[in-house]
Length: 493
Ligand SMILES: *[C@@H]1O[C@H](CO)[C@@H](O)[C@H](O)[C@H]1NC(C)=O
Ligand SMILES: *[C@@H]1O[C@H](CO)[C@@H](O)[C@H](O)[C@H]1NC(C)=O
Image 1: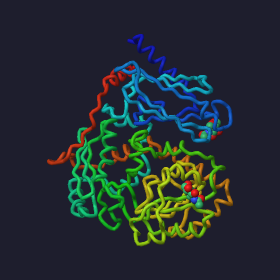
Image 2: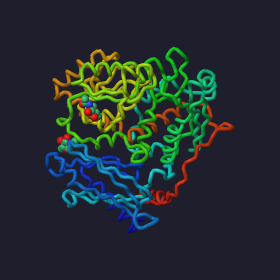
Image 3: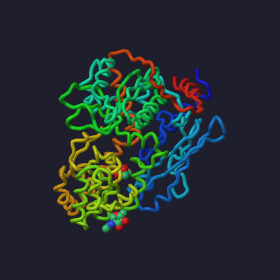
Image 4: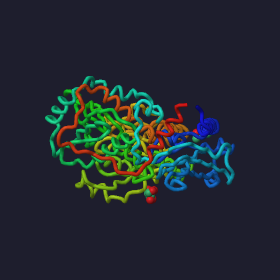
């Protein structure tokens, strides 16, 4: 039987789907299904108002997001608009309470743009809510995740019918070197997270804890166990037994299972929170259009690799082409006289006062690459045996300009860019498109979810919580999950 309220709800759902135009898009328009710390969507304002981009558009565009809450009359929401300076704005918002519904109003010159306000029925949960969806595949689809990634399949191909009990013993035998290696054995059982860590420096387990807890709040995770390496260096050399260890950075001569780095993962789960640099914010905190940027290559960083010192040499020989400084001496303290004095840090957003950004490895891959790609500059990337989970998809000369490992052709490459401004600009644009297609918070969450679920399917041994494992609890947060169930009933129609 259709009740009046169900009919109204169906009409509303139809209205919402009909009225959100194509040039407004992104996961933040499905806040019920896609729970994130900061929801986001894009507004292609130039195509909506039929004007070319100019900076005053930003002030003429306004956003209001409101909702009702079960607890009080309104729900608390923080809205943030970001100007990409290309005619598309990013709207981000953080929801602090369970909202019954949301109303998104978009204004141009104080008038609603066509179709606005957009009404979305909830419940819309804040990220800390522990209201997991029961069915993993349903959740994956709702969240807008692909079923799998080639890279995931590829990185797990050495691991089938894994007896984790045997593997774990071997991992401990081979890698338990407390001074130099730290890792954690995680068990996820009945959607609760447990771990045992090995090594002296296990502080980074907060990052692996965070992503596992984050996912477990959204969906019932399959039971599984895995070993996560807390160091930057991958561990499993190619010429040894391929033990299953999850790492943040890969290398050509290793076979670790690569997951997104703790850096980009943290910027995802702490978006509009503790972390301010992420692949969204970096698109909106840039003050100059391409043509206004200085035609120089910029770099800042610490002395964690010899080529970084070499970069200083190159820059000193070509001061009209580079703005490069070391910000810290640790690895080559004895060279501080020559390569110092160390310079203060500059805001990452300031890198984009320049057209070109240099990416040189640190101890391993430089984890800043996602933000450089999103920032809208042209990246000069040092060739490297190290890689992150997405590097395989990057193409030289399309998304970045490759530079020899020893930087011997860096100046030549930079001169090419200076002489071919249109091509350089195109590479910068492609890089940003790449970041928007692969490196936004939704992509990082999906990648982890798919990777962990694919991994769980390869485990043959029974997943059990060993005596003495540490339980990693969810942070307590008062939440109204029941509202979700109520709405599920409606959807059955
Ligand atoms: C905005 O939409 C127009 C028309 O569809 C398109 O040509 C343009 O590339 C879009 N802008 C961005 C930044 O995606
Ligand atoms: C290099 O960059 C810094 C930070 O943007 C700036 O303050 C400084 O003036 C620049 N140096 C030169 C020589 O352009």
